[in-house]
Picture 1 (cartoon, rainbow, N blue to C red):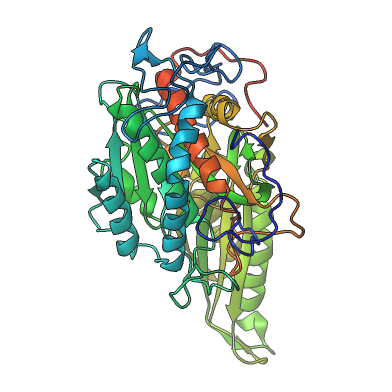
Picture 2: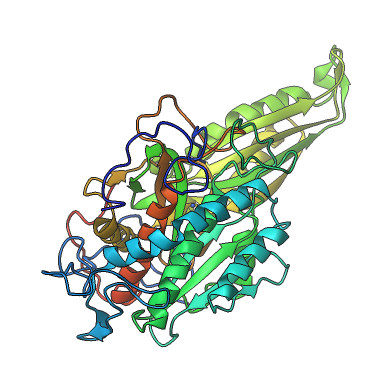
Length: 508
């Protein structure tokens, strides 16, 4: 059955069919009351009350009401554009559909996969930077309206969100980021290369957008047939790379009433057909720091008559990272790394100012919140010892993305419905930043990594490269996973109602 077998390595590119890879598949990638996750100790603010992992289904990977039928019905798995597969049977027993989910998805993808691949290629050819995604937003909104949905554009004019299904049950959000990177597209031999000089989709956001769109169109059919046990909100977020787009979505009410949020991110280290899962921190907080040091200046022959600013700056650059790491639990992985240090212009003059710029990264939410005050106190201590003045500009970037264990279990249960039995793989933590973490500061949820690498392809790949591309067979895989995860979360009622955990429910 399509989607169950691990894709074989293709012989060459497939143009616009959605069944082959995208040209030179070189790969990429680059996340009211307080809740506490018992696995991570994280205490984000907001209305979430998730309390550890619990089994979300009555059996491993079996979605209630979506178990494969014991015998095929006379109509088979055929569906219609406006209803589910399996002859459009209505709900049974508590409103849960009798047909299996997988055949419904296969019917949908047989009709829409080529369209979705073409949609991705169109976005890839016309990338737009953060807060400039006007064409991208219009294309998404147009396709949603074509299916009878009512997207809401964000106040700044780019990005949107759209609700599917009744509002009287739990609400689950599926998030995609829509912006591109200021990089030159260096791919050769593909017809969908970026047409915008110096701008490229080198982080897979065109793929993320297409997968959430596809999942939304499928779920809209389920809702029209009365088979959606709640509401799904599609979040098409601008400016993830800037960052800031997640905060704009939240300010516009994008997660108001949402019980859980899920997202996929392309990972070129994982093969197509595989889903990388991890409970707890999966990506790090990432902030920027700017330190300025000032003094009277003077001659290098007489440092005792002035403040030796260069020496003081050197002590700040070397002592702050080690001192900062000693103020927090080592498991938080709090790190300060400098990227630029500058002072003076000639060899025999002590300058009167100098600067150092760097990034602070952290996997622990509590340590992230404490970092600015700790760094300010340490900076003043070192500066005072050398009689210089030091100022700190600390610019918040994104918080760590900390996956809730129960939401990871939902990803796992959903994957068991629509992927090969070996499709779920462990994935490591990354110190890269991902502003999906802002949503998880307020509501439970999880970010998973989707394999986009052609099976058997040689070499190592990473995100944010000019030659980034994906094996486009990842698109239907992502649609299956997101649709199944949304349904799993909705059938489970959105948030966990009990604090009991299930041994082995997390994937470390």
